[in-house]
Image (cartoon, rainbow, N blue to C red; front, side):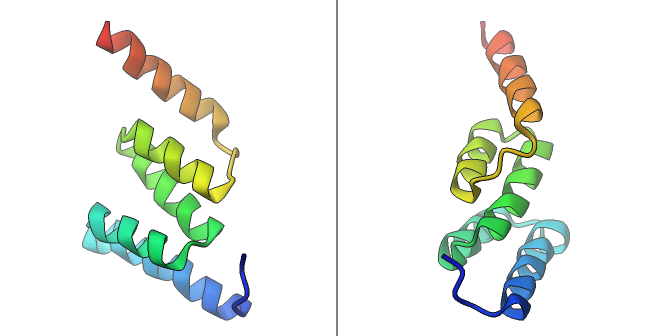
Length: 86
């Protein structure tokens, strides 16, 4: 999927971090992730979504990224949401 040079990918990851950490605009961050459609960018978005308890969005972003690195966190978060919904 990644046909760009590593430096471009690094700038894309930096850009999503700026949107998430400094601008704090989740909608713009999601639009950017959709536009560049790189696994590393989706993974950064997913980490922040999970940290902000946006569990279903985080799982979708992790799936787009193909990233299972925080699989345990996903399940614990989903379990908390499901047990709280009863």
